[in-house]
Length: 421
Ligand code: A2P
Image (cartoon, rainbow, N blue to C red):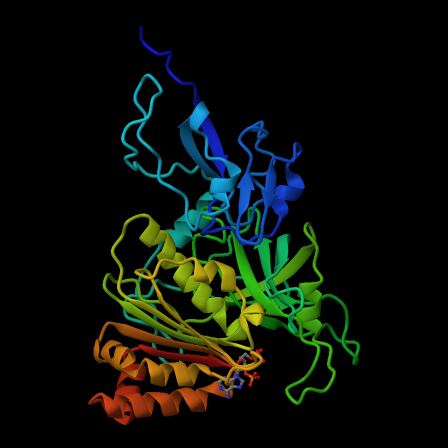
């Protein structure tokens, strides 16, 4: 006698590689099917009623993940909690029994993109202008589409703390949705925010610039949104108490609030698009925003099976709890990106800055610098510029290169980009 074929369940899952742990899905689920631990957000297949209420509020699209499974073999919560990435779709035969577990790829559904946004985002020509030229293969950036007299009005669709609850800095991931307005941005570009109200002289506040932290296709692919990485400013460079108008305004925003946005800006700090190009990224704190945009762009390509050049990241922060995107970064595959964290304020450990890490990895860094397909990006504290330059000088010398002649050459070729503040 033949066994009855198992029922196929469209199991709703959350992609741990993309999830930024904002808790939106758990808050939204009407049947409490979603829960989390310190590692992953998970969905109980026995409780999920496939109502889709949680799908559109998710700012990243991590929630829009599905696998067809025999109902009696749905992934249990205990297993999902251990995942670093989603398992592939297993092969199912027509009777509903599973094959040998062959992966046949993920199935995501996508939202709508306004036609004009898609058209502009698709236009890709070599960039030009700016003090240092952009990489020769950079997409054409659009700039100044919205000015202060006619800003774009974005709606906040998420505002999540990235740093640990007990961290000294409050760094946030803020997602802005542009609805039907065209606001095309490239990785490395900045946008301007107009804080409401007047300054001490009774004039409107001036524009505050922030680097975009999401890739060109949106924080959530094919959605018309972007993200920012914003640190709440509570003290000045000397450590004296100070209230940052723009950063506090942004960090206090709630879902649904409207924000006036101008820009986009930036024609130089852009990523190369040609196959085989390598990225050498060096950042501290919120200087990670453009690096997140670039790596996320490439992570999506990597997930789609595209072969890419190398990615090497040097990231400095006071401690892991103070490092924005620490959790998601640690989940990225080693073959995708070579990550080096430098922590400066871990009790009992020596202070380590990005320049120390560069020296330690001198041979590998020099190998990348020797390759004319390597593009360097530095973003973060002004102070690190000198230290990074010194590290480049030393590691080049130790590995048969001359930084004094290489640097101007890389600058001229649009392969060396620095944005510090
Ligand atoms: P430090 O602990 O000495 O301040 P912040 O959290 O203030 O944004 O800083 C991010 C990281 O950059 C911290 O680890 C900080 O270390 C580090 N940093 C500060 N000054 C420099 C510098 N001159 N070069 C490299 N890193 C620096």
